[in-house]
Image 1 (cartoon, rainbow, N blue to C red):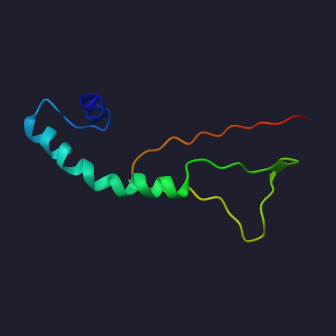
Image 2 (image 1 turned 135 degrees about the vertical axis):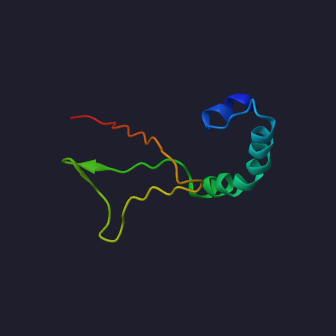
Length: 81
């Protein structure tokens, strides 16, 4: 499991120095996980006639707490016509 996470994040784990460097940095991103728990990772936004229904002073933000890096954002539309 640890080896797979390392490879997915671009770490060359066959090199013992690189593996140790990955292990050393891992605890420093714990704050990102804790902040993510406070902020949440999903949102439901009503859409009417193809437009988001949000207030005048509201907006949608993507907050990257552990980056920068490439991200994938999933969007799911639910409803009826």
